[in-house]
Image (cartoon, rainbow, N blue to C red; front, side, top):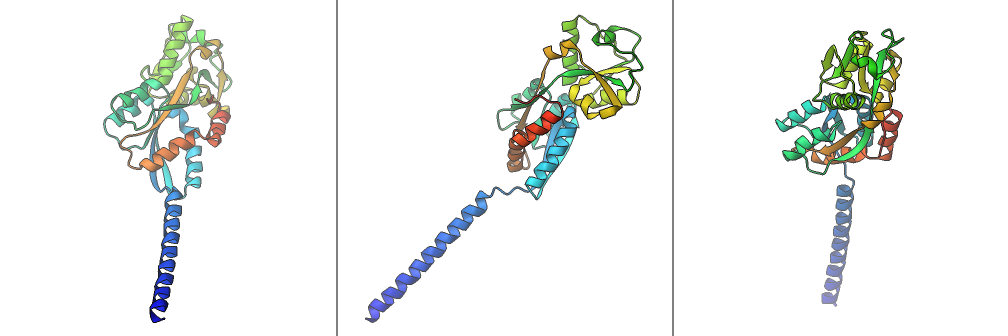
Length: 261
């Protein structure tokens, strides 16, 4: 009887221990399955994404408490060079596939870049259009003060294609290192017109006026995004890229004037 009683107690202890272990296992899976993120996510992004990415960064932080999104906005070509030179970053969002391909070729991305939006050019003029700009042909005249993006950045490369299609030889007074710099020349009334993205015209509000032109539909800039191979925060980088493809993000982009896939 004593032996049986001892065996019964031992069995009970084993049963409780097994149950506790099972509960511990479930809790462990639940904790690891939550996918909690933390830390800083450093994103290198094209200047034309400034407004949308800033908003989406705040939304991402709200969805993942403990994270902080930090941006470096600029010309895509310059950002690609910085990444190749070892600048610490988690994500790269380019305004053109060619600049993304630079970092792909050097093995600086961990996943195949995917397009998340597209954009097209529009003429920006100061409020009231003091230079009386009527269309793209005015960029080939000597009189208007004109700002264009540098040819090595996506907005400048797109402009070159548009002018070639239209048979226009532009006569810019200044070439800027990114699209926001070109737009600033307009908002400060330092030029009569600049060729920027339509999303930048919309973001500027009543500071500028936009003029559409037919040839803009023939040159579309597509924007790829990818996590970087040397990302200090790889988990958050992957989550941020995923968020940029979400329905919530697509609405933000559409409201800003981007086309989404």
